[in-house]
Image 1: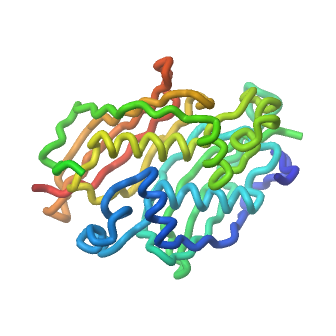
Image 2: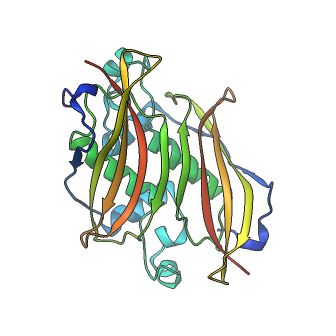
Length: 147
Length: 147
């Protein structure tokens, strides 16, 4: 992981991840383990659903794009975890063969008032598909160690 | 999946899932794929972190407990997906060997105003560990087909 601490973030900064293509096999495997609803796990049932075909679990879209953002350096050795997420929205279906591009924007930051070793970095995450449509977004707070 | 439609939910109903124990291997495998931060992926680094040892990715806690809730029948053939989550909080670390118990409470419901084939079911999800401590919670809206 990069040597990235609180002082290395700045409001307005946007970190972009490389793309990740979700195969049909990836979607079916994740659904089998974690989200076995018919429109994620069963092509025949999915074709008859309101989605008209197989779509990826929203948990999978979150997990795979978070991986790509970690790999892109959005968090570094200063990461101390996150207390949570807000306003997570799945705005478009993700289908087999879609390629996802995630980005994180630093919207605000402040030192912790109770713990001088860390700060809070507020981020908005967006995930787009190959057509540029936003398929998922959320806000989160990251706890980041100060140098 | 059970034959569960909008009319089969009621406000105040609580659906409880069976427990799921997270092994160290599960935690490491999920971290390797989706959330490779040192306190999820590296026992030695985790021991020196603020968590004092390996903890599960929050995405993993969400995904595995959602699986247990689907298996418990929280969603049935009437499920049409979810537009999103709100106020997701990770309130306690989840460590290797912890057993997680998830529940979903129906807090409100109403027919869709624009689409007569479906209703909205508002749920609060809670995940507790074997000591009864809440480790994660969130609210979500489910779109459910009417009979």
